[in-house]
Image 1: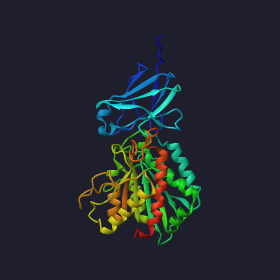
Image 2: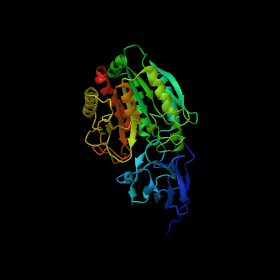
Image 3: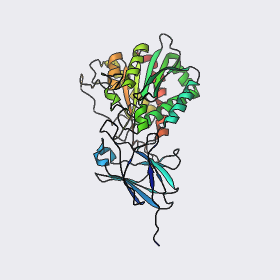
Image 4: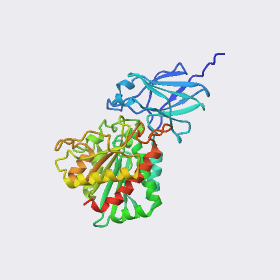
Amino acid sequence: MTLTLSPLHIDCDFDSGNILINDATDPSRTRLAIRPDSRSDHFQWFHFKASGLTPGQVHTFVLENAGQSSYNQAWKGYQAVASYDQQQWFRVPTQFDGKALSFDLKAEQPQAWFAYFEPYPRARHNQLIERATRLPGVELLATGRSVEGRDIPLLRVGDGAPGKRKIWIIAQQHPGEHMAEWFMEGVIERLEHNDPSVAALLHQADLYLIANMNPDGAVHGHLRTNAAGQDLNRAWQSASTDKSPEVFFAQLQMKQHGVDMFLDVHGDEEIPHVFTAGCEGNPGYTPRLADLAKTFRDSLCKRTVDFQQAHGYPRSAPGQANLTLGANSVGQAYDCLSLTLEMPFKDHDDAPNPQTGWNGLRSKALASAVLDVLGQMVDTLR
């Protein structure tokens, strides 16, 4: 007996949604494409809902322009994520033929969501800020505005007392890198526990936290840019109130409060590992900063199997750093330990999880390990 499948409805009209429909007439094989960032040619992030699935049947979704995406080599070894409830996300069988990315789901329910990575919704962001500001010692220090007027809250954990170290952590300059805000949720959860290690850190340091630097891009389903088409992590030497107000706000607050350590949290499309990129190419890079970076990396390796130092970006030659990047710019301006932390869209191959790959939960656990390391080395930052 031949089973006639019902037509599918494909929808991306929601927070961080991104998909274009090429042909949905065949319910068993839906042809799609990824929509580029507005005012930019970048594209890689996708997120959509498929309704009308037939339980027990295999449905295939084909992203026909994946081979033209911003990081088209990143699809090798990549597995898409799916969810039936937008809470539990799991990896699904995925293939890339050099042109199109296709993934399959043997449906268990009539509808499912698919994404490049486990999304971090704006509503959850708002709840996270509310959770944080209810904690003792946490204040909403200032609020910036994105190009489209969305809030960019800056939280300070601590009292701003003279002599305390000022540790900055920002996330999701690139809006498709949702693992970065999952990391920030991990920071807030650890603060909620208020254990002795965190208490010791906060005795010596204040934390300055921006959980999402690019809310417009995240809401619109962008990979790389804000609503003005600006890559924020290439705007730290030319920030402006019209093209990159998000960076302009962060820089203004840093000038007002100071910086003793900076961590910029990201995700990497291609490399299946967790790693950091430092400021080795900065003109002002010194042996003191090199020692701090080594201590951070070595200590984090001891804290978690979800970090390693063998894989990552090539280090810039002395004096050849790209100072438009956030970490390089801040490290140079404040003569401080400054790092970009990268998590994978794929999996961390040194400690793989075939069911989930790298995901939100593992991003949160990494944040907890980072706080332990910061507590261990806070008194050496200056």
